[in-house]
Image 1: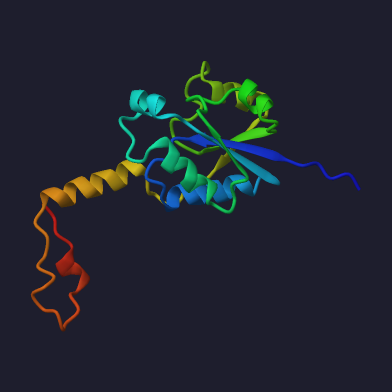
Image 2: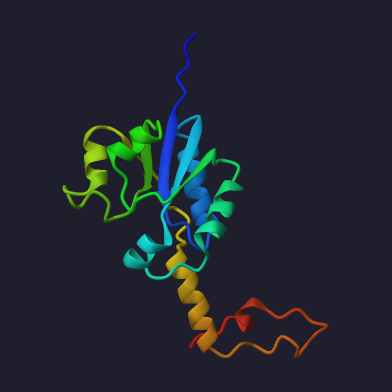
Amino acid sequence: MDTKNVRVWMDGSFDLLHCGHANAIRQAREFGNELTVGLQPDTDIVVHKGPPVFTESERHRLLAAIKWVNQVVDHAPYGTSEFILDQHGCDFCVHGDDDTILMNPEDGLWRLFRINRLRFCERGIGISTTNIIQRILSRSRCPTPDLEAAPDQSIPLQVMTVSC
């Protein structure tokens, strides 16, 4: 019996690595036997998304520690191409099923889709790095509840939720 080793590519900035990233990585790995994750450099992230929180080295170590990741490729370009897949021996790329995906026929992902080298994972968790940063910033501008007020009693969740 001839079993083909299916290699999958996924890339991204993976800044402030969170459960949404881990879920996407898990889904990507389910498409094949090996998962290679391309890590975009700080210079590209600054241009497209703003300054990253974690350094490239920190992001590399975090990704390498995820059990579904077989290899991390540093300095992956912002935008996947057929050349990148071939260079790393990957059969196809996995990307989140964003609303904006495949909107531009000039985009590299559009080409990968046309040649059947693109697969999609669900973004069902509804969390993003941007959401996390917005939460942190909004909470830093809002007063926090006095958690020391009643040390012997648990504070109900609605009391801990502060809106500004």
